[in-house]
Image (cartoon, rainbow, N blue to C red):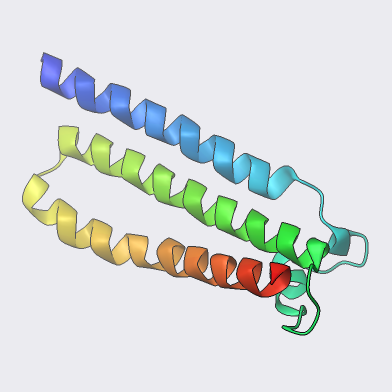
Length: 118
């Protein structure tokens, strides 16, 4: 392996560790709906615009945002590894399709965060 390939592998490891840290914080932080058996999305979705400062919903939506951001970093790490072993011409179209879902989930999490706080 040459220096350029090791550089891509090092960047992939850094991105994967950052993604795992963000997703870990988002998934392992306790939220108010856990005792009632509710998911993060249910807690975040149940807040209304009239209820200003709904902190359990804000915490759940922040967790959703962190998990989806972590998944985006993990996918970027996979992209860096694919630069070492696969042809780059197929890489951009595949990663565009794969990264759409975490990006949409991140936008939904930010929307629920704004809705819960303001």
